[in-house]
Length: 597
Image (cartoon, rainbow, N blue to C red; front, side):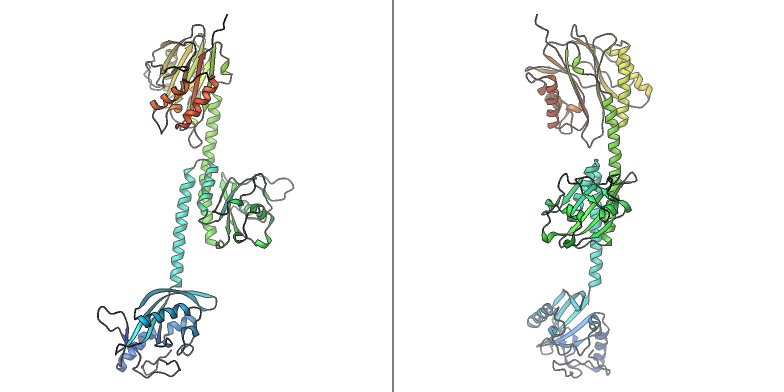
């Protein structure tokens, strides 16, 4: 490598002849504090040359000395180990003659340092010193000056940082994966509906790890005559594609059959991520169905991964991830991360399914408690009612209304709201409704009935509270006798006229156990609408209760609308101004006009 056994350092001229000991040997950086790093060349004693030669030989980084013609003058063993070359293959030759792959960049740096005397430190160089073996180096170049100040060459240091960059890249990818997993978990958990959760998952992975993501629900049984394949729903339950690939969604109504040698079937059967590489020239039929003829030639899919989503111990869906164009093919690390993504979706979807099952039970229970008879068939009265559950992302509440025939005669009107949400609130509501009907059949007046309900709720011991208004209307006199247990007051509206609340003393909510429900009497004039409702209709996070009541009053004072139409208008209008946070009940009553004789 250009070192001599005597300890004298020798280099080589471009013609191959060796230099004499003590000449053209790097020894130190000479200069004032403001000078640029450089190596000075001078005659030194043999002992110093031996020390310098040992340092040159043992440094673990590649060292090179180029003469004024930018030909190799000396190299060390560490540099030779990088490509397996020899001293004779380098000394006297240019970088272009030895390593043409990296020559342009290295030669440019060498010439710049030689001409300007300015060092270049820490430059990144990427290339192949051996065929098929790409490496990365951190390069530094410094000028070599003779003792008289003239420029006589350039020294270069090459540090192989390939493994360091790979480790940094792995660490960076790990951070990206962790951020992706964290983001996906937050997105998926933020939604309650299983379908929305799966769409959130698809939105998270595109374009971060896939160009296309489609989620297919898996049927419980293959169709007859289709072997062991899996029949999925015609349209994906969730779909996301990066910009430019939006047209690749499967055509609506086209059933996609996965025959068994595909990622969807494999993931559904094995409950593990399944990797499939595709040849664009020989695309399988199931992949062609996914294409729908919308893939551009430069964006052909080359890798697909199916990842199962498990809920309740069963595979309920498969997430299909597609890599296209110049995106790298998926590897083992990608499969592992996709499995982790699916695991988070598994838990979230299962929770979502349980929530919706609970919602369905509560809604069914609640609707079963509403009047089944045609409420518009009350003698002498026009009646209309609506019940609307809360929006999908909120639990069902305990609102209810009822129209009954008390033993004492007349028409009983009930509007109530159990505090709280969920199946339990709906169940408590069912108990109260049943009790109201039973007490009404016993002929209890409104005040007596609410006192009995209050005692009943205390006896039940569920620590639940409810508001309720109970009124009995006499169709002969149109007198309304009512009592209120902490409920929002009824509204009284005349078409095209003023609207006001039917204010009266309110007792405490049912369940407080203190009683005190006074009865009040009011006469219902012709063409006047009596509105009973729950606070879910008029209260929202967007506005307070009083603003909501004023908005409802404005709707009820409209001209010439049937009560059915008015119910629909009220529900729609209040939803526009911020309703839907809670379930809603509305009951409208109006005297029928007396027949003209």
